[in-house]
Image (cartoon, rainbow, N blue to C red; front, side, top):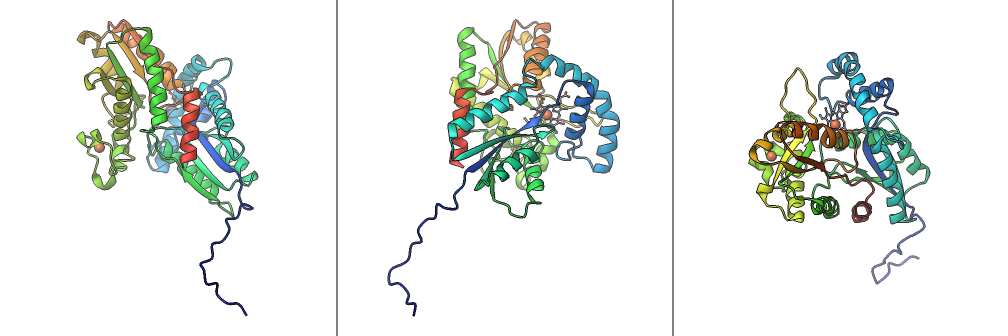
Length: 357
Ligand SMILES: C=CC1=C(C)c2cc3[nH]c(cc4nc(cc5[nH]c(cc1n2)c(C)c5CCC(=O)O)C(CCC(=O)O)=C4C)c(C)c3C=C
Ligand SMILES: [Fe+2]
Ligand SMILES: [Fe+2]
């Protein structure tokens, strides 16, 4: 006969089922090569994503695959050729470097994979690598500091779409924003301070990838965001508001570098010009920088804190195109702060975010 134990039973924790923890780092994507056909294939996938171009599929596919992408691909290919170096696309090789170093940092209890939302290496292949290793659970870290439905949201959707077909789905968690993560902030601030030691600057510009205002309003929790002063504080109501996160990152970077509010400006770049003329987040970086020299701001230090790796949007757009515009407007010196890439402090920061998850 079985009699109940008088003392509460504490089941011994089983270690037999323990496996490695899978970590999936994901960045946006890049073409396989800077040739026009490869850029066209990349843009076709990117710009028909319903989270990037939020039009009905019946309009989006014919408009973008039939008109916008064929027109844009040769021009984009030319810019990608400027970006490409002996290692290929910076976004890709910095991602692979980061994967290797985070793996070394986290050690044998973790398995770190890397995937791209568009093109290669695919998220599907990276997830398969984790699945083949029978990882106990998966932590997904989209490499976008500020949550946007078009970037982080798209990675989340893709991961969920892929794992829905698995018969056994392990525990999966997402690190959906790290706009105010101390390791992220401190690494960028250290890179900025290193530039400031080389020369004097009149002003700092924090230039973020833009998104349509409509995207921000669609993501607004119970109508909290009105694209006004609501975004000036970062709180539980606007945790995932892209605009509020950009301001939060900027405030923390400024504080870490000892800047006052009048020593920096937050701007938004990379708007996709369309005939629909829908407003994107403002002020636009190109418009702001052109007015600076006339106001006596001749030396500018520019950050691109929406990216953790150098890419087309940092090296070419901020580092070259904006520099040229600024100098043409009468500015003397425009300097881009390099991105985090595989900086040792950033490797530590990523490993810490994973361990805390
Ligand atoms: C920071 C995260 C990103 C958000 C949010 C985002 C939104 C978004 N982007 C486009 C259109 C384009 N973006 C392009 C390049 C690009 N975008 C991001 C990141 C975010 N985009 C990165 C990291 C890159 C660089 C990729 C590289 O290989 O270096 C491009 C392609 C460039 C070109 O052809 O000129 C387009 C187009 C939209 C419409 C959008 C939100 C609605
Ligand atoms: Fe983009
Ligand atoms: Fe807001």
